[in-house]
Length: 171
Image 1 (cartoon, helix red, strand yellow):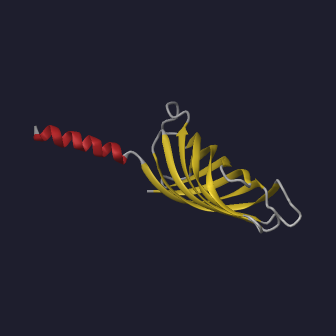
Image 2: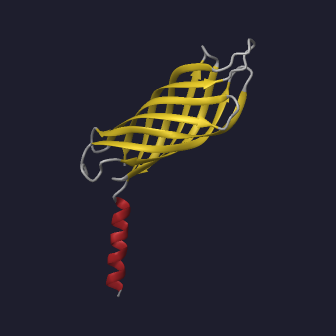
Image 3: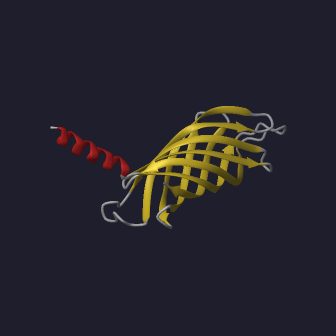
């Protein structure tokens, strides 16, 4: 009976080791559509600029979960935000390409953000969807290309669109 218990615990431990954890950086081009409330009553102002972030997560052959912290600042449209998101991605075509280095995915995300403009400062939740792919560069490094679209419950922020390029170190 002790042998059987040991073997089942070894199998369970091996199952846990099949996934990978990662840490990485991301940079992207983001567009935010919001009401800045400027001195001339600017509504529906669109700001586009770079967004920078850090990420940490875990993945296996079928799914990925990640936490990302991002920062965006556009002085021209007087908008900036900081956001933290939790994302869940499902890898497509994994049965056909089990050992493939190219893995397309679809996913959802949600989180909390702070939006600021000259006369606006609000916090709120956001949610959205994403699509993209990862590409294994080496055994320890992969590249992630994604598009995220986010909506929120804030009064002034309408939506955010973001193309992101991430580089992850797998451990």
